[in-house]
Image 1 (cartoon, rainbow, N blue to C red):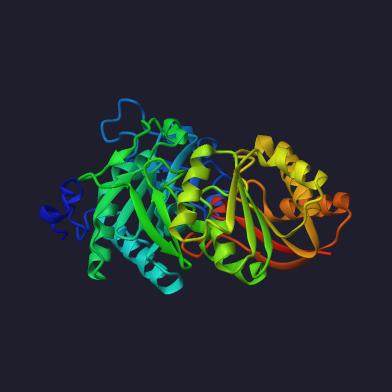
Image 2 (cartoon, rainbow, N blue to C red):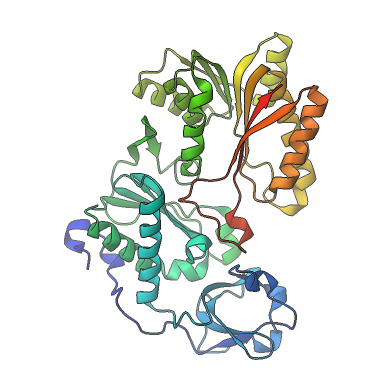
Amino acid sequence: MISTDTLHFSRFDYDTSDTSDLACGVTVRLRKGAGRELKRGGLWIYDNELDPASLPSEDDASFTNGSIVRVEDFDGWFLGCGFLNMRSTIRIRMLTRHGDGPVSCALLAQRVRDAWAYRRSVIDTSSCRVIFGEADLLPGITIDKYEHYLVVESLALGIDLLKGVILTALIEALQDDGIIVQGIFERSDAKVREKEGLPRVKGFLGHPFDTNISITENGVRYIVDVENGQKTGFFLDQKENRRAIHRICQGARVLDCFTHTGSFALNAALAGASEVTAVDASDLAVEQAQKNAALNGLEDRVHFLCRDVFELLPELAQQGEQYDVVILDPPAFTKSRNSIKAAARGYKEINLRGMKLVRRGGFLVTCSCSHFMDDLLLEQVIAEAARDAHVRLRLVEKRAQAPDHPVLVGAGTSHYLKFYIYQVL
């Protein structure tokens, strides 16, 4: 067990070897023909997929929202166990499938150990995502590791109740590898928690510490603000994509749009770019990016502008500016199916503007972090932008999120990041 006297995480002191079944006595059934996503390998069951007659009543003493229930198909075939929340459109998030055995602290701890072992085999783990929700069969929770600190985001009621078990298991797994966790910060402040009947929370889990954490990735140093930065403070999912631009940036004139903390810009400069201009609409982001540039001694080669990218790019085109590499890493333009058409227009415009600024033979690096903009639609939008910009594109490389953010086949939301390098001809 963890040394809670040393780590001050006594609230997470769980027996992770406990094999007791955590499921309550409630069994629910799917409607006939329902559960298609589940049967393809996903973990979610929606409110309209359950037989209402099988759901627990308000006066059922054996059930409270977030409890783990047994799930059967319409014909009584046992499908597995998951936590049920009657307040959420995603009624059940599955924890096990038929044959996995009961849900227990020991099972959850093994899931955590498996997740850590996987990361050690595929990526530099100094700073990485160690738990990625559904893709690690722990739906609704993500945990990022920044050196010796953890940042946790819990988005579902059922997993929130199991958060202590998961954190304890992770601390133990890291400790077995000689990594002593120095602090944990919670960033469960996303609005989506309200759909689960949960409050939005942010703060220390255990003793306080300096929330500006120094990390090194691909040879670049950053200060990560885990308290006030976006998401958990840093976009770890682009780690290997940032490294992928190194070979096209040597001696190049680079424009990095939506720079955030300056990560692509600094990688370009470190790779030998002759000049980098980095743009973001946020004063706070630009200030942090400038500090990161100074931290790496790159302030003479990276120049930051606080501007709206959509307004700036046409101005640069009018001025006749040309770049060897243009990087577009915008925030998600859509977070729902209802706004896909508007998002497609946004992606087309930003790519069209970016292409016009790339010299012939130069490179366009373009991304989308929206799950709802699938590969086919995004590639179609980029092709339309190229047509309107009167250029041809040659695909150099197509990538996704880093492997510490794995894609679980059947769980569509786990594949969200699309990353392309094109040569503009």
